[in-house]
Amino acid sequence: MNLTIFLLLRADASWLKLSRQQRAEITEASLGTRFSAAGLRLRHFDAEAFHARVSEIAMIEAEDPQAYYFAVESLRDSALIADGYFELIEIIPSYEDGFRACEAAYVA
Image 1 (tube, rainbow, N blue to C red):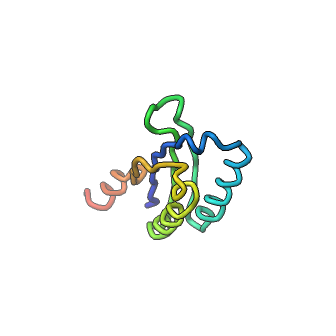
Image 2: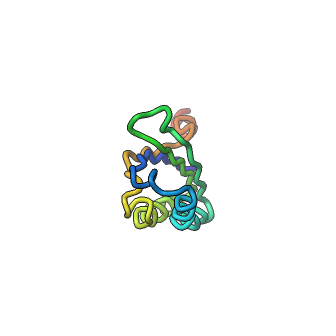
Image 3: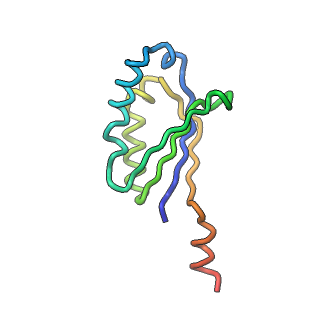
């Protein structure tokens, strides 16, 4: 089963004060290679217009929990998190249709 993890993030005012070009450069430097490993997929969703506390949602799909773990450890060291541009509000790990896999394995 693939692991799907939702990272709920909040952008800091310092991020919003940067030019779009500066944001793009920091984003590329922070995410460019971290989530390009085999078995990892990163998707991004904007939520600021719909939620007061969470401005961004990152959805990570991982075939291997270790690959996810290493990518997130690296992300924490990146400018996005380490320089305070984003605060990690919550991490929600999940398995898509996990109940079906469980039923197939344990229910006769």
